Image 1 (tube, rainbow, N blue to C red):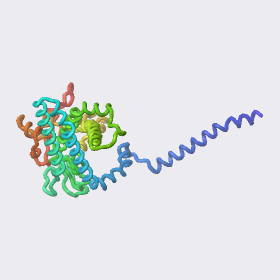
Image 2 (image 1 turned 60 degrees about the vertical axis):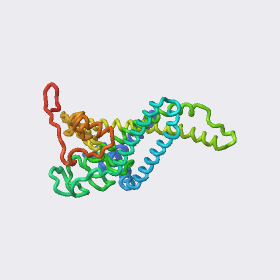
Image 3 (image 1 turned 60 degrees about the horizontal axis):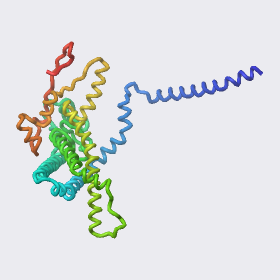
Image 4 (image 1 turned 90 degrees about the horizontal axis):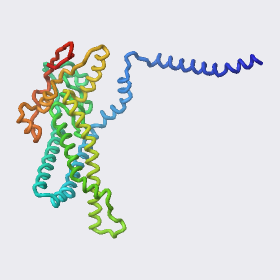
Length: 344
């Protein structure tokens, strides 16, 4: 009887041991077939996102015109609602000087938004020459042509782009050396514009959103239809501009950070991996194109004098950045025992 009891007590242990052996067998088989010493989480993520990259490469060029059309329609809609619903309220309830100030400020924003958007869409981001590139660092595997520093291949445009930041579907164009500042200024002025429209329409939005809506039981006529349309336009205008201002604000802050550090979106990803690699070796990575915050912004906008800031940034300008996007200034650092690496 004791022997039978002892055997029964061993059953759970044997079952557990059996499944453990099977699990170890499957793990060993998996690692034997798929293990790679050079595999990292970044490569796994890139592999997992490969279907999305394939979709972008093959369909972004078709989605681009649709998204540009959508942006144009939305900007036109916001401006039309502002001048038909919001600006008349300013005109009838504010002092003449306040009305004039709103008119000048609003149109200044609109001109800058439209100008920089059109420049971002139609200005070529810049391609390197097919030959005679003195400072080329490699050869593009797809273009089979010299690849200057900070140049990357865009699979959507199917060409190399000078100082490529990213391919923007909202512009249906690459953001690169010749139109990067137009893209940034469009985001900045659009962000300010959406905040401005939300500010102007806030009181009217509160009145219509929390007040009584148009009574649907009243017999429909042209007056009630206009009131209902006015109510819907005011509410939609405020919600649209508020939502866009949040998204554009985050995007603008992100690109402001990159510009301050002398990086593009692609370089930020590359430099991040290089920074981690050198950190494991006890070394510090420094971006060679980081000339300092002020110098980075001057380089980005092509500003040479203080007076040129007003002309090049605050007002529409067709100027192009300094240089040709082939050669770049690099920073020099010195190593001190107490303070570490310092920018010279």
